[in-house]
Image 1 (tube, rainbow, N blue to C red):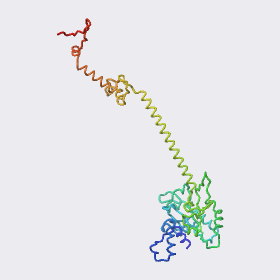
Image 2 (spheres, rainbow, N blue to C red; image 1 turned 45 degrees about the vertical axis):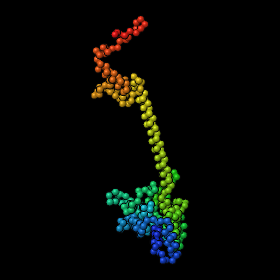
Image 3 (cartoon, rainbow, N blue to C red; image 1 turned 180 degrees about the vertical axis):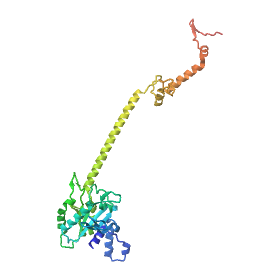
Length: 342
């Protein structure tokens, strides 16, 4: 029953209010509160009960030394790819729970050959989960749900259990966060708090931390995520700065080459205007398959005028030029005399 209550507390199904229209007001009020409460995690198909975790043997024929999970939750759509859940009615001692968690660790470390012939952790041959959890190459998290039916105080149990299993969950201190590679995130909560607040409430205590958190934060590593986000932002800013420097250097180099080219740009000996790019290129043409330019020192306009003048002179011919020559008038005796007298 405690396992079923845990599933309901995590799933938080929403009642159909239309089917409760004839129920007493207090029932309708409770149903409305359930509808208005935050959503749970997964669907009913996301939960499996009494799942063997063989440290030896096979899935179908587990050997000795393994554990059996009360619940396994897979809800990647809700950012909980894989979660193993143990429900304790406060009858087990911290030592008994520590032994069970040790069996979890043995199972997580076990490797087998997958269908592709590659060796990988056995749990990965059955469940899909990210290669890393929030940047850490950790084992899947284990949630301990305490239902206070027995005589043992869950607060004392958690405190003692945390000491007994520190080698399983304790990470390495890094700059601003902990690295949990090869460790098991172990989280604890009470069934009463879970039922009241659901997986989104700050009722989950992860071993090694000093505050209660919502489930997704407890199974994750927010400080590492923040540190990696800062690193990515710094790397992005550094890359943008580098690219900006490269662009500025390229622009400066291009401007320098353009200025040097402009300094070499020829000027027309006729009018003094600078050559256009097309005129400059034409003036530099060689006779290697390209006709030489007839007036390489003139701009297009001056070249056309020069060609026109040369063409008119060629059409006139020597004789026409001589007979058509204008003879200056002569001045004699203080008066102008025409060359022709009538």
